[in-house]
Image (tube, rainbow, N blue to C red; front, side, top):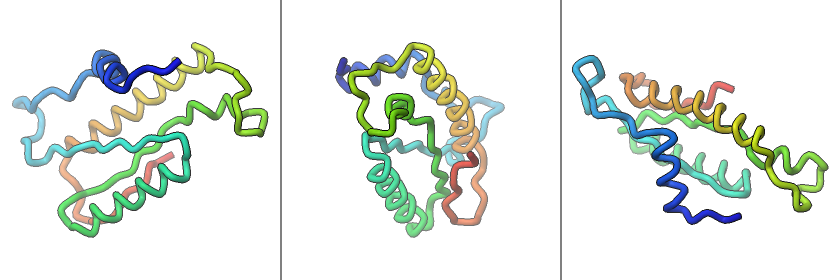
Length: 128
């Protein structure tokens, strides 16, 4: 089943709402950062693109960059070692587990973009 991208965005925005505007207890806007998501079916291409983008942002010198990686939903489909799913579908339990893992990662992302960056200027890898 293929879901159009805009429908996915609408569903995801309902499941995981946007970060609210700064309040009295949150940091001012100039500390808040952005999140750039790179996704695709080929993990090596995604990693290559993400690394290249991170490298360019660090070279610019204006950004504090951290790469977050998440669970691979296709891992359970490839457990036979062939790399093909053979018509196998992702079970609901697997979907819920993956969603739960992404919710944990989103908490880390929110913390990262709402705290003052360290002056290191380096790419911080995911802490898995």
